[in-house]
Length: 229
Length: 318
Image 1 (cartoon, rainbow over the protein chains, first blue to last red):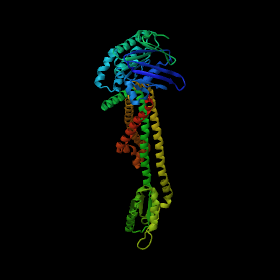
Image 2: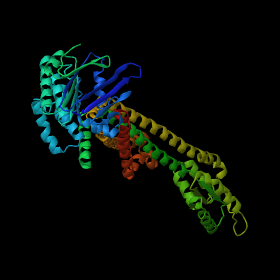
Image 3: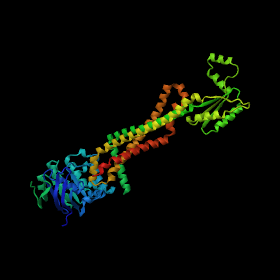
C-alpha cells in the first residue's frame, strides 16, 4: 500500500543546537491508527508540528500524498490544515466562542455553507455526547468535555487524518478512556489517526501500530505494539 | 462565496466586539481621547482664526483731512483708494459725523462738553477709514497716499496726516505674529496628531496581543488570513464608529458649555461687544457639522481599522 504520509530522513535542529529529530523516516498508510510513544522531549510533538507546517525540518522532507509540506505556500498551508484535524493536550479551543461557534468556525474556515454548518455541528456533538453543552463557553466545561469539543472540531470537516498530540495528558482515567474510545470509533469510520501519548494504558487499549521515540530517533516500530520504554 | 465570507467576518467582528466588552471599552476610551485631541485642534484653530480675524479687523489706518477739504475731492480719493487691490474697505466719515460721534461718546462728561462748546465751529476733520485685506499691506497703502498727495483746486494739500507712522509698530508686529501663530498651531497639530495615532495603535496592538492564542488556534484549524484578520478589522471599525459618535457629542457639549462660561465670565455687556468671540464654537460647530462629522468619524474608523490590520500581521505568520 502507498503511504499517505511519509517522513523522509527528517532532522530538526533548533537554533540553540539542540536536536529534536535526527534522521527520522517512516510512513503512515491510510486508515492506520498509529500511536507514537516516548518520554517528554523525545520529539513526538515536533513530528506532529511538521505535518501541519507549524515547524519545518532542518533537513529532509515530510510528504503528504506526495506533496512536500515544507514547500507549500501560505495559502496551501491553510488548505492542508483543513484536511488534517488536530487535537492538543491543552485543547486549544477559542475561549471567546461557544462550543457551537468553536466547531462552526472550523467549518466556516473551510468554506462550508451555512446549511451544512447548522446540520453538521449538532450531529458531531452527538457523536461526542455533548449536545447539551452546545451553547456553553469552554471555561464552563470540564477537561474531558473540552477535549471532546476539540475532537468534534477536528472531525467536523471530515479530514483525512486526525493528529492527536497527548490528548489525554490532562485527563482523569475515565475521560481518557472516553477520548480513546471516540478516536477508535473515528478510525473505524475510515479516518487515519496519529496519536502521541506516554500513557501505558492508552497504548494497551488501542492495540495498533506503535512507534517508540527516543532522543529524536525511532527506537522501535511494532506492528502490533505494546508499551516498551 | 465572497458574500458569505464577508457576512461571516462581519458577524464575528460584531460578536467579538460585544463579548470582549472590557477590551472594547478600553479601546473606545483611548480612541475617543485621541479623537477629542483632533476635535480640540479643530476648535482651537477655529477659535484662533476667529480671534485673529477679529484683531486684523481692528487694525486700520485713518487719513485725516484738512478742515476745509471739499467733500467731493475726498469722495473722489475714496474711489481711487477703493480701486487698490490691497484695500478691503474704505469708509468716509464726514466731520459732522465725527462731531456727532464725539458728542454721543462724551455726553455724560460735563467738562468735555463745556470745552467743546467753547471752541467755535467743528474742530474735527473728515476721515477716511481704510482697511487692508492683510495687515502687511498698510505700508503700501500709506505710501500710495503720500505719493499721491492730493490737493484741492487751490493747491493746498487735502490730507492733514495719515496715522500710519504711529500705528506702524503694532501693525508690523501683528503682520509677523499672525503667521507665526498660524505656523506654531500647525506644528502643534502635527505633533498631537502623531501622539494620538501612536497611542491608539499601541492600545489596539495590546488588545490583539491578548487574543494571540486565539489567532494561533484559528490558523492551526486552517483558517486563511482573511478569516482571522477580518473580524479584528471589523471590531476596529466598530471602535472607531462608537468613539467618533461619543467625540461628536463631547464636542457639541463643549461648544455650548464654553459659550455659556464665556458669557458668565465676560458678563453680558462685554459679551455683547465681543459677540463674535463669544459664539464662535457653537456657531462653527453647527455651520461646519458635515465636515466635522466626516473628519472625526473618518479618522476614528481609519485609525481603528488600519491599527487592527497592521497589529495582527505578526501573529499570522504561523
